[in-house]
Length: 279
Image (cartoon, rainbow, N blue to C red):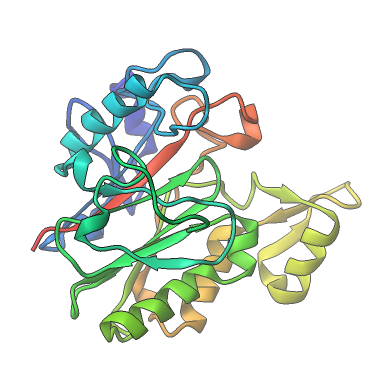
């Protein structure tokens, strides 16, 4: 199964050669002082619909399995599971600053926060996590001020411009300049696979008409490119076009090795991406 993941390689993302595989951005991996990785379904101990690398603690998978999955994946990426800070994603627009004292929250100790879909930090050793199973994970890195951020952008977060709000929070908290920030759009559903209708479609037609098109032969089925919308949002926030990287790996296209809500509904596990400063 490990070898079967190689077909996920794109121009911007690659599969690690570690025993427990993960996806990484080629350009971000070349940066010094930062570690990152995105999980697949492969390499864990979970079974059934959670097979095998499920990182969701609240889906019915035994806690000991999920914890072991974190230890395996984090070890492969080169971070400690104890240093991970889990968000509490609810498809809203709250951005929270994470500090060293938050390490382990949501995994080994209870969270003392709720409704957090984006996190930022400038402290080394604080591993920010972001969950997904079709929604868009956005990873932000400022090599000048040494600050990072992660954002969970489903359609609600995307149209609410959560990626831009995360950039703004990095500006406010750490003095980041958008022109220096690099953005990486991670493993998520592509514009050919993601369909919407009704008021959701109408909202995107009003806000981002270039990123949505009617599917041929169907009255109210629209194909929505969340990757393109988030690129637009980030450019509007001041990021340089050349600093925005789209990984190009679709969860629905590759649901045999990636979790996809559109394919299996709630009968699934959860993937996660991690981003951490090391110095």
